[in-house]
Length: 87
Image (cartoon, rainbow, N blue to C red):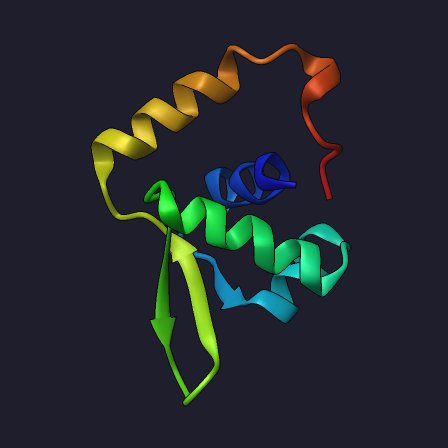
């Protein structure tokens, strides 16, 4: 699931949404598993979380250009079978 989120962000670098929006619109997965994946990605610096209300966060792709380049390079090296389908 982390891979699906990262692939979406690499294709849509300025995208940002809540966990619910990402689950429903980006990757079509459950909210709970999407939230878990976002927390992992945040821990590694791949996404940043911004508080917009007391308990609501918006998640966006890292602005770190070195990390972005590294992620893009890694994704290019993945076999096609492991890439999620384009949405």
